[in-house]
Length: 112
Length: 111
Image: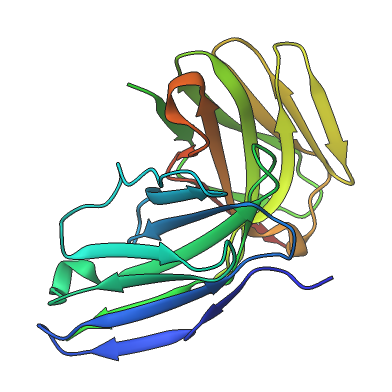
């Protein structure tokens, strides 16, 4: 079956611009997560959505980062006024409730 | 604070040379230890979940084991296609469902 999909696969932007990253989870998965993977570092948790519950935003690094999940399915991660330190691979994962997380291919963001 | 440390950072093996990767962890109430494989330019691919000390899981040339403080990923007679970065992650009681990842072990298997 179809896995987690993310778009775009690559995004190059200029410092100060806003970007939107999209995640389509596996059908039927109620939980959705965003992680960030910087060069040479482990995956860093950003935000977690579970059904209609309030999201766990504890991993967002600053108020320039926000995410929403519409209709319990597709999610968008928005970074406002991008900075060079935001350059990283942004990974989305989904799971059935508290089950194993399955990851998408990621979006590589480069801020010039 | 929940923490995961993986060693070694990088490992070079000859084809057929068995070895083990280590994942040491501290977590408040383990609710699962996860192993993933990540190829360059791709997202992590799920391998195993372990929940309690003494548990073991196997898949082809890979075997994962778990104690109260660490997990090992044993690779038996590896092949070049096993070359990848192997990631370990834990889920604790206090962290809702988020995973805490280690930095990974880069494995290179040469013919």
